[in-house]
Length: 386
Image 1 (cartoon, helix red, strand yellow):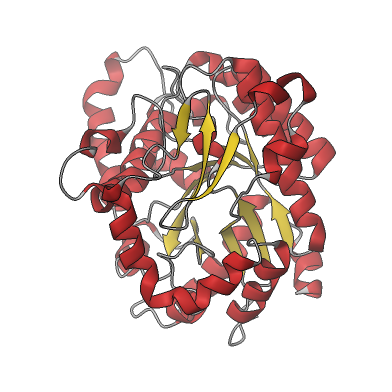
Image 2 (spheres, rainbow, N blue to C red):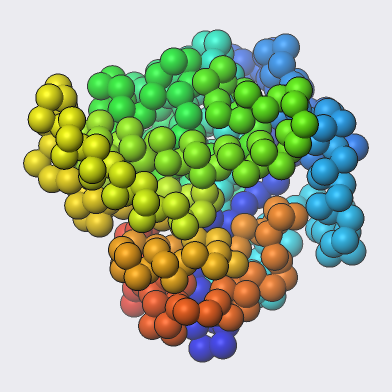
C-alpha cells in the first residue's frame, strides 16, 4: 500500500539469465539451447540463438553509449540489484519500497529469443515453455504477491494454445503474452490464431500484448533505424507504442474481439497518450471502408475496446488526464516498470500519485480496481492480504 492506495503493478519485469535454458529447456533441444553470453558493455544480458545474437544490437556502439548514459546516474541503485542477479528477493524488496501489494511478472528477453522468424515451431514452443517454467519457480518465492505471465510464440498457434493451457493449468500463470509484431509472417489477426485466442478465452486469463526493443523478426518497426543516427532513442521510442498501435488495430478491426467476446486483452508498456486519436481513427476508417471488408463487425472498434480491452499508462505520463477525459478511466492500468533503468524506481508509485489533472478516484481505479478486473483476481482475497 502507498499513501492509502492499494497497488497492483500490472507489468513488473524479471531479468533473465543463464538458468532459464540451461535448467529448464526440454532435453530434446538441449544441443540447440541458447548460449548465454553474459552482460554486454552496457550490462544487458545477451544470448546466441540459432546463430543470431539476441538482442540483435547487444554489443553495438549505437546502443552501448546511450544505454550507459541512461544508467550512469542511477548506478548506485541498480548495481547491488544486478550483483544479486535480479532475484525474486530483490523484486519483493522493490515492491515494498514502492508500496506495491501485488505484481504480475513479465519477461524482458525471453520473447526476443523467440522473435526470430525462421525458428522451427517445436523449438520455439520449447523455448517458451522453458521460460514459463523458470518464471513459475521465480514467483514461488512469494506466490501471494508474485504472479507469472506466460509467453507463447505464433510460429505455430496450435502449439502456442497447448503451451498456454499447460502454463495456466499446471504452472499457475495468470496471463498469456504475445509480441505485437508479426513473427514468421504471421500476424495477430491471422485466422489460424483463433485456436490460441479461443483457448485463452476458455482459460479465463487475459491476452497481454507486450512489445520489446530487441525484436529479431524481419517485419519490425524499429529495424528501419538500424545503422542510422539516433538508433537507440528511435528504437525505444518507436518500437513499443507503434507496434502496440498496429497490434490493437489488427485485433479490433480483424474481428478477434467480435469472435471472442469474453477475451480480455491488455496492451502493455507502450504508453497510452496516443489512444484517443488511434481509436477515433480506427472508428473513422471503419465507417468509411468497413462495409466492404470481408471481416464483419457488429460494433465500432472503440466499442470493442471499451468492452474488453485495457491499456497501461506510464507512471509519469502527462497525457493520462487527456486519455481519461476522452475515454474514461475504466480501461487503464499502470506499471512502475521495475527493474528497467528507464523507469523511475524507487519513485514510481509516488510519481504516479503526484500526477496532476487525475483525480484520486481515477488513481485508485488504475492502481487497483482495473487491474483486478483485467486479471480476474479475487478482490476480497487480495484486499485482505495486501
